[in-house]
Length: 105
Image (cartoon, rainbow, N blue to C red; front, side, top):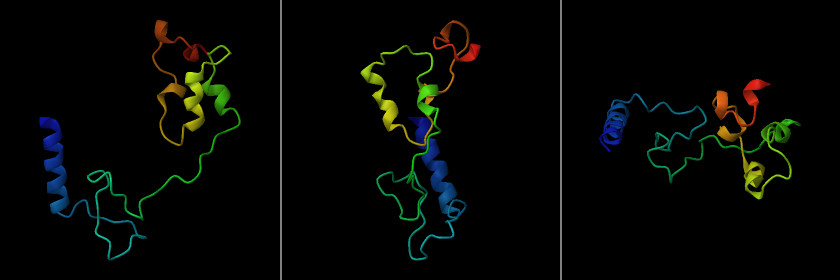
């Protein structure tokens, strides 16, 4: 908990010093500047949003490579993966832990 409290203290100091108050050019002038993340329940209108999810044609094939059909229902979460980092679809550890064989390709 101490590390978290230190982080909050540093953020408060940086914000109070005006170092974290640079706002995007399209932010309304009358809107207070917020450091996104300090109030996760409040998202400014000018904050970027993901509007489309783009997948290449072989995205599902790559995500499911190394897994034998029939695919378990637990992998249906892949249908909802957006444009964020998803560790399940990236190579992980090497050696005996590479159960999907991604490092040997």
